[in-house]
Image 1 (cartoon, helix red, strand yellow):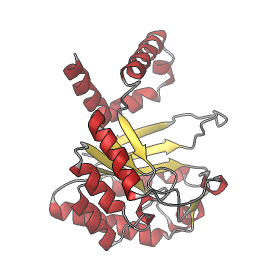
Image 2 (cartoon, one colour):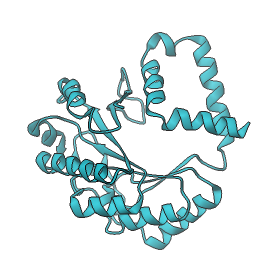
Image 3 (cartoon, one colour):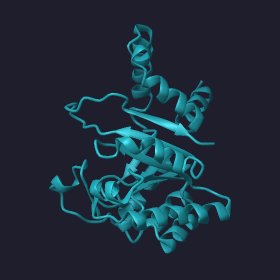
Length: 256
């Protein structure tokens, strides 16, 4: 049964086409309000929580909580924690524990910009050497210059999520304050070129977070980037307290 479960899990979590179908259905109020769906969903969540009570599917390691942007929708500016970087010995300890528990995925990022950490590519390489099947990260790409791009490609990263929330300079820089749209776009395009030239991973997924300012650019964004990356994710602003009313929380666009 575990073999069957693992295959189903991998298909639903890591296959872009299947993700697209799942996310499209999840945006249908008719579908999600169906009593049968509610029952099956609750049953599935209960099973997952029980199955992974002691061993998580994915562990997120915050290598740094420092960030070089002041995004309009982010709580980073309100953070009271001292800013800094995780020590490499602590990082190794966490990864070793994950490997011993056979955790499938380790993501290196959280409330900061992971590329600010000078040990970032070293951390990725260590996680892969330790036997972590999927190592991923999420970046704003402002520091993804050719030097860092090469280091990341050499490290063995499996998946990179890149946040890019506009197709124009004024909208982007109004949302992701402190960043330069031209630099970020150039970095992303060059990273794609370098990755493609090697014919290898990581899988590149672009994130577009919808706000009042950029909501009219979603279609243009998808047209512009859909042939360049494996996947585009469009998400809507949310909070963990449920104070923001959401429609169509997020959906995934698969681009071959």
